[in-house]
Image (cartoon, rainbow, N blue to C red; front, side, top):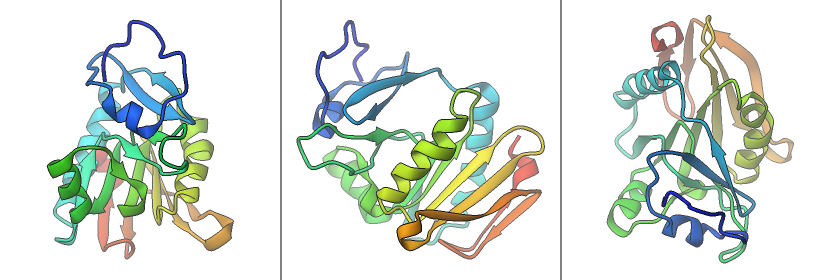
Amino acid sequence: MTALTQPPGRLLSIADYAALSEDDRHRWELQEGNLVISPSPTPRHMVVAAELYVQLRSQLPSNLRAVPDVDLDVQLAPLGQPGTARRPDLVVVDREEFDRVTETGGLLQAASTILVVEIVSPGSRRTDNLVKRGEYADAGIPFYWIIDPEVPVSLIACHLAGTFGYQDGGSITGVFESVEPFPARVDLDALC
């Protein structure tokens, strides 16, 4: 994204958002056409994200790819309309989707996303637990993990439950083991 010298003065579509250049000073997301800025993650936040990536990468089946800190088109609006793009801490997508973006550009799309992971920050607790939880469920992303890096590190594993949105079994500490969306074991204490 380009370091904006002034607000765009209009609502942005996903195409408008994707056309912006890289911005190494700010962390942007697009919410219903509005650019939203958030502070850069703390060093602890980044270590938790990196350690999670390392733990998951070797456990993924060959048809999936984990991608940290990347823009995701949540696909909640028709093309050309004000869109929503989030920047999750980690996404797991079909390898074909990863290859598509590598070859042709654009944003990863929710329709090819298996799992989204958000790591809670002091300024994102409500957004991660309510707003994004609703958006990702509406987008049909089958699994959503919310990690709270405060000691003891905890994880809430959400899965789509039809019209009910996401369901979860509560907060987990210590070791998290999953069968879906792929067999995985995450040592939460080793994330920080």
